[in-house]
Length: 145
Image 1 (cartoon, rainbow, N blue to C red):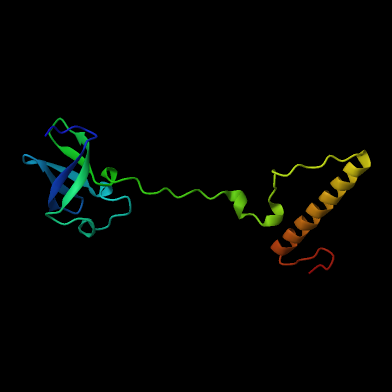
Image 2: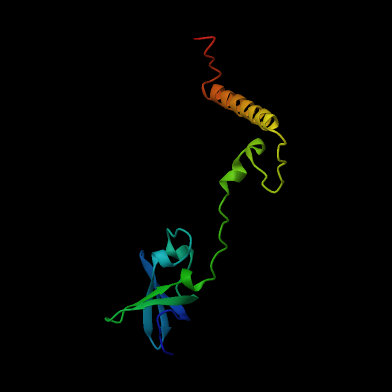
């Protein structure tokens, strides 16, 4: 069997050390799986994942000029399902989320526009004041401490 970088092959674990596992590939050719390439999770003890004599799938990472073969067990496995990143806007309280799917009605006059602006501004200011008072531990400027 021809060994090529990037190829996934099966081999037999022939030895385990603190830093990796030795895997016999074919015709007596042996490569090493470094501890960082054993699994996609943190590996403290290699013996928790493989034992001598186990048959494992490995990916050939590198074949050095000196004949050393670097292998990876974690890259030979299918990719674990990725965790979907959390959308920060979904963490906000509902009153702060904006729904852009609804069409906004156009005000008919300048007075209507000013009235809506003032109402919106007053709501935002009261929310801000409430938030700041909570951060201060309900400290009121008028009451003084």
